[in-house]
Amino acid sequence: LLAHLRREAALKNFPPGPRRWPVLGSLPSMPGTLVHQHAHRHWLPRYGTVVGLTLPGGQDMVMVCGGEEVIAILNHEHCQLRPDVFLARERAFGKRLGISLADGPHWTEQRRFTLRELRDLGLGKSKLEGVILDEANATIRAMVADGPKLEPNFLFNAPVLNVLWWMVSGKEFARGAGSTLDERSRKLLVVLNQAMRHKKIVTAACDNFPILKYVAPEWSSYNEIYKPIFKIQDYLREEIQEQRLKGVGDSYMLKYTEEINKGRPGGFTDENLIINCLDMFTAGGESTANTLSFCLMYMGLYPEVQARVHAELDAAIGGADKTVTMSDKPNLPFLEATLLEVIRSNTISPLAIPHMNSQDIQLNGYTIPKGATLMLSMWSVLNDKKHWGDPEVFRPDRFLDKEGKFTKDPWLIPFGIGKRNCIGEAFALQVAFIFFSNLMNRFTFTLPPGSERPSTVNVQAGLTVTPPEYSIIATPRVS
Ligand code: HEM
Image (cartoon, rainbow, N blue to C red; front, side, top):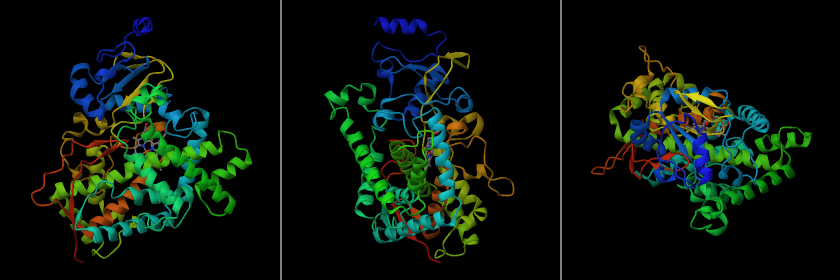
């Protein structure tokens, strides 16, 4: 209690927010999931766009839920650290490793190296495009075989992970929704799928009270969350060893190994390699796969938009039996606008990964003390009424200019901006474009007659948001 009172007294000009209790902090007022929706509905009208909170144990936390304020923090030179949370160390051998939850000089080196290798290994190259197209075609074949009625939730997880697996391990056999994978890769994908679907991954009780890991590992979801993560680490370690024994090929794993062998400074170790790979799978798999599930749902909800996408495809591609490639993108501005409007409307990553400030900073006249956890609502940027006018309306035309060309809005930042922006943006957009365009060229998507319209608000929370459970009918189009 004394510690709590002392901390409260030291907080000068802290943003207003729900009551902060000793030990529990603001936990009693925190929603279990979908924090961005709760902040928008309940906190914003009462406290404004900058809300002061405390985590159990006394860590200061500030929720920022105004578009301008979020952009200011993302660009702020003193707000580029990550808080030292339980999840960060627990998934990384007790250390701050990897990219997404680390900071400091090692993070700079690991991020720079990974960005360069991702670019060199695949992005913008025809080989990656070929792998993505193979996966898209395998998915289309499976949809025809399983259809016409499909459950799109999780339909795209395996194909997206397969492409990521190819980037990381260089294995070319990762094709066909997992069917031709070797035993280890198959197991890895199964466990990754399980880990990504875990709804409590960012709100589990063991994150706030680490002692529960020892005294109540089942109840606190510790076993459920971390056992799959440890299995993934084991599979990755075995794969790295196998690749090193073979020693040929151009994979991220082998390129990284070369740096370890050269003794490159900046944290180049086996452990960091494992966590960098884990980062790419966890940050990139679910988000990209969910984008595609949402795309089908929106096509079912907005048949008039779908008809315009089809008309554009027919004019530019000329047949449902043809393959759409990245070179067709300039001729498909409405399709691109539709894809980005799905990403904007639903904000697949509604919160950025938490940031932390290295100095006291001022925001909207409040003081945020050094070392606070900054929760940034990306949703509030992509749904800001002042900027977008009618953010609640699904309107791809907002991204087209008078000539019908695609124009990027500076507030369209679903991947973040600044020093901590997403390293997988180009990859995710390429996968999403190739899948979405080819699926649209091959099928018409309709909601089953008499079924309830799936909600765009009652989404499911996990690492990112997932559509509600829904079915869709995929009818093959005739050329
Ligand atoms: C639709 C797909 C995706 C969306 C919407 C998305 C969104 C985001 C967002 C909002 C952030 C946080 C930015 C911040 O904290 O300021 C982020 C970070 C990150 N993303 Fe993505 N992402 C996607 C796909 C991917 C993919 C495919 C990969 C891997 C290849 C990836 C890897 C990462 C990593 C490693 C970070 C942490 C960067 C850092 O802390 O320096 N993401 N992403």
